[in-house]
Length: 446
Image (cartoon, rainbow, N blue to C red; front, side, top):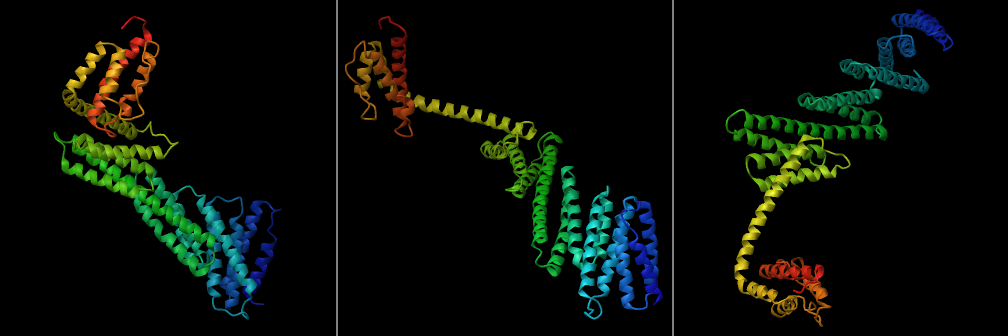
């Protein structure tokens, strides 16, 4: 028996004596002594078999040490990493060996132990408080681990970068966020590369990596959109407030950034798209006085906000500004349309002066004469709309009510007939309505 084998057997005996019935302190003490014995066996190894056997035992002992409950988190992480290093070195040393040199069961056991070591190390590292420490420890793990488990380590490294990037974005540190999102690509791509090389049929991990890459691209685009809005806001503020008159060069730069934000966020981040559309609309309406273009953008922002229900934006300043500007534009637009309609109506009133004089004269002669005059001189466009007989004091109110329906402006729109006929129907409806109210609510002779 060689010296290496002797120390290894002593270590095995001590290792097997460690069980859960012992207190954690004793377990730790015995495992420390076991590791010392295995290290002596490794230093005295006279052959490759002795060397690989000692390295495997060291990996197993460090793994058990990492699971001891009495140590602070730094020590379990150290021992789990040592386990990964020794087990990975064991597999590297035995690459290319034939079945006569080592059994398939032995190799399978090493792979199983390595997977357990990696899982333990990853969980311990993820439990650390500081991001920088987590990153450095995972990077070291990726460097030393055997390629069969490298995919898992790179995947977890990518997750740390992704979390940091999203956190920076939420704190509105967009420069750091975008740079960190870019850093995510390498570990995820490496994870996918090693997975396809070692476990090409592991669809679960492959799908997880591809999902993370998709999340990465979406979140990075969202950060770029938010950054474009933020810089655009700064330029717009400087352009309007820093000088006595607006700096249009800066304003146009802010417009370009808002447009860029809308492109980045389209179909990915409705809120950012809505904010960019609102900001752009306000620049067009408040500064450039291009109200129609501004209205389209403001309307788009409100529609996007509606699409995100039940989420509400009434507490958000951008949404309140958007609704306020939209309301002001609609009032101004309605006033302009009313003025244009009034001018157009005046033209037709002058053109229909003879017909209106005839209506006034017929109105003075009483409701019955008015009805007969209207249906005779200006019959409704619908041939089925006629004045029913008899027409007397008992039926007059009903006939007036029916006439209001026949000549109501909503049933005689210019879009269906012509503007002149709509204006005439409005005048007829006024006269008939007056007589109808008199007949309905009074009994005095007309």
